[in-house]
Amino acid sequence: MPKVSILIPTHNRPNNVKRAITSALNQNIKDVEIIVRNDSDTNILYPINWIRKNVDLYYEEEAKGFDYAYVSLIKKATGKYIYYLEDDDYLVNKDILKKCVDMMEKNNKINASIFKSSTKLTDYILYKNKQVKNRVIKSSQMFEMFPDISIDFQLGQVFFRKELVKDIILEEDYGSEVNTDASIFLKLCLQGGYIALLDEIGFIITIGKDNLSWFNFENCFYGAHSYINRIYTLAKKKNIKNLDLWKEKMENNHIDFILKYLDDYYAGIINE
Image 1 (cartoon, one colour):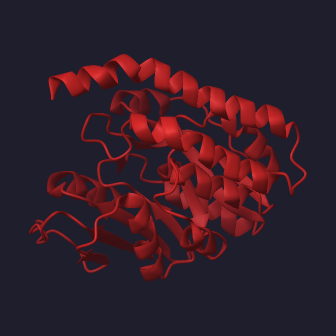
Image 2 (cartoon, one colour):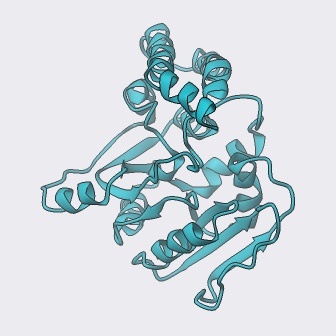
C-alpha cells in the first residue's frame, strides 16, 4: 500500500491534538506518516512520550490560522495521498482511509475520495449497522452537487492524491476569503477526473466556541461572496451546467447560515 500522509494543524489544544493523533495512529494503514504543525502562542510542551516514530511534531511561531498551516504541512508530506485532520476533530472509522486508498489505487482517474462527518459519536455507532453503498462520479458532477453540502463541508471529509492538490494549496490566497476548505476542493473538481463517494461516516467534528471551524460572522458575511465569485469565474471556463443557479444556491446557503446563527453570535458578544 502506498504511503499516506495525515496532516494535523494544532493551536493551543494540547489535549485535543492527542485525541486527533491517536485516532490517526489507529487507522488500518501500514505505511503512514503523521505530521503535526504546532503554532500555539508558546511552544507548549505536548505530551510526546506516547508518540511513535512515524509522528513528526514541529513548532512554528507564525500563527495565521489553520489554512496557512495547510501550506507548511503539505511541503513536508512525502506520501502519495494526503489527509488533513484538524486538531479538535478525530477519526472514528479505523478503515476509512484504507477504503479511500483501495478505491483510488484501482482507478487512477479518481482524484479524491469524500466521506461523511458527524457531530456525535452516537450517530456513527448507529450508522455502522446500516448497509452502505459507495459510488464514483465525475468531478464536474460533484461540483454541481456541492451547494447541497456547502455549509457542512470540511476538508476533513476529503482524501486527496497529493500530486493533484499540492499546487492548488500552495497557490491559495490565504486570508483573503472565507472557506479555504471548499475553495481547495472545488478547484480540484474543476480539474476533471472523478470523485469517489463513501457513504459512511469517517470522523467526528467537535462543535463549540473553541472549535477551529466554528462560525465566524464577519468572515461569513464579508468573505462568502468573494470566495464564491472567484470559483464561479474559474468555473465559467469549464462545461459546468446551470452555473448561475449554482452560484445563487451557494450564496443563499451562506445567507441562511448567517441568519440561523445571528442571535447566538450577538448573544456570545454580550456574554463576553
